[in-house]
Image (tube, rainbow, N blue to C red; front, side, top):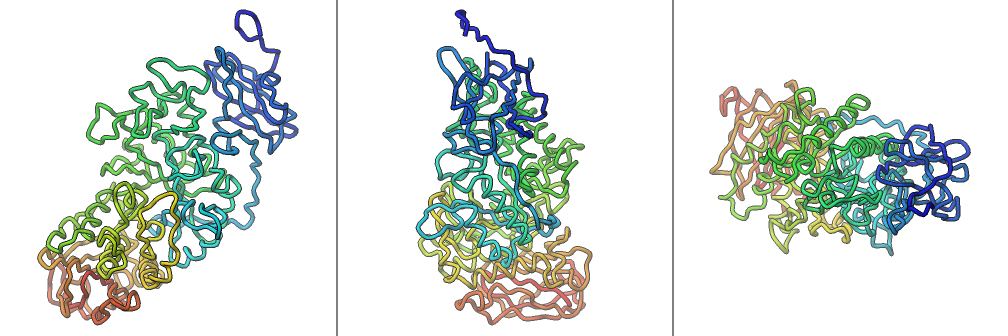
Length: 609
C-alpha cells in the first residue's frame, strides 16, 4: 500500500467467464462482484488461509471486479474484502447461493443435483389448489422445535391425497436467526440454513414434483433485511441523502414499513440483481411459480394505490421486465402478486401497460367473505357483499385472482384463525365448524384459484407464529372437517367428471335473499351434464326443508356435496340435502326451478349426470 493511501494492486487480469457471483470452471472458481466505489476488492477464504490481501480482484473498468482462483473449490468458505478509510469491510458475495448463516461466511456451492425422475408438468392454472406453508412450523420430528424441508417431505402424500397440487412456501431466502416468517431476507440468493439450505430445497421440490405437486415460492423485493444485511453500504459508499449505499434508494424513497432498505429499482445493476434472483429460483431449483410480497410497496413509495404522486415507475417497469422474461421462456409458471389494492392493472398484460402478473391475491374476496362468516349476528351478514365477492375478477379471467379465507397475514397481525374469530376460546364449537366450512365452500366454488393456509383443513385455531408448530393431533380430533376439505378440493378439480363447471370462467349469481341469508349461483365451463353446477349457500342459522331456486336445465339434479353431512361432524344435521328435479317453472331469471333442502350455515353443490 502506498503512503498516500492509494492501493497499488499487482497485475491481475479480469475473468472473461460470464456471470455474477461464483462461477465454477474446471480447475478453479471465478468471482465477479459489483462494487463501483471500491478502491480494491480481495477474496479471502479457506483457499488462502483467510489472507485479506493475497488475492486481489481486477477492475473491469465499469464498477465490476473479477478474479479467477485456481485454488478455490466447492465447499470452501469465503468472503469478499473491501478496504476502506481506516477499516476493512468483510462482505458476503451478494449472489452467494449458500452461506453458513446470515451472519457467517459464504460457501462455494455445489450446483449439482440429481433430478432423475422429475418429469413434473405444471397443472393448468384453473385446476390449481394452493396450500400456503411455513416450512419452519409445518412439521417437525420429536425433540426438535423447528421444522425443516426434510420433515415436510413425509407429509407430501397427505397433501396429495387431500387434493393439493400446489404448495406456496413462505420466503426461505436466508434470514437473521432461525425463526422468522421469512420477510426479512438478508442474503437473497441463499436458502435459509436453519431450514436445510440448498440441498433441503432441492430435495423438497423434487419430492413435491414426484407427488404431482407444484412449488410456488414467496419472494421479497419491496425491501431487504434490515438485519445481517451485507448489501448495506456494500462497498463502503454512502452519503447524507443516500444512507444505504449502492443497492438502495436515496433516503426518502428507501423508507418502507420494514426499514429504510427499499432497493433502487432505477439503478441498472440493482435491477439486474433482482431480475437474476427471480429467474434463479425458477431455473436452479425448478420452482414452478413466484409470489411477490407487497407489490404495492414496489410500485409506490408509500404503499398506497391512491397516491400516484408517490409512484415508483422504475419499480413498475422492473416488474414488467421480470414477468416478460418468465412469460417468454416458461409461460406455464405462474407469478402471483400480493398487492391487495384491487388494482386490475397488476394482472393486465404488459403490452397493455399492466404489470403482467399471472394472478394476484384478492382482498375483494377475503375481506367480505371472512366478515360474512365471522360476524356474530346473522342480521349483519351482507349477502350482496358476498355476491360482489363472487363476481369480482381481474382482466376478465377467473385465474387472475387467488381466493382464500385464511393466510399467514389473515391469521396473525391482530387477527385470529377463522374458527377462533367465530367463537374466541371455543374454536371447536358447532358454530365455528359450520361457519368456517361455509367460508371454505365459497373458496372452492367461486371463480378464482383457491388457497388454504396450513392446518386450516383440520381446524387449527392457534394464532400464526413462527415459533409455534401445527398441532397435528387436531387431524384426528377433526377428521370429519379434513374430509370436508378433501371433498371440496376434489369437486373443484372435477375428479369425478361431475363438476367441470367449477373450473370454468362462467358465473351467474341468480339468487340473493338478504332476509333469509341464502345465496345461489350457477357455475359452468361449456354447459351440460357434468358441467353445469349449482351452488346454494345458507348463511343463516335455520334450515329449510324445501327452498325454491332457479335452475338452468330441467331434470334430475344430484347433490354432490352437502356440508351438513354427519360424516363431517356427528353434530351436523344430515337430514337435508336431497336430490331434486327441476321443472319448467321459470325463477330467478332461469327457465327452470326446483326445491332443495339445506341445513343452517351450510352449502350444497348439485349437478346432473
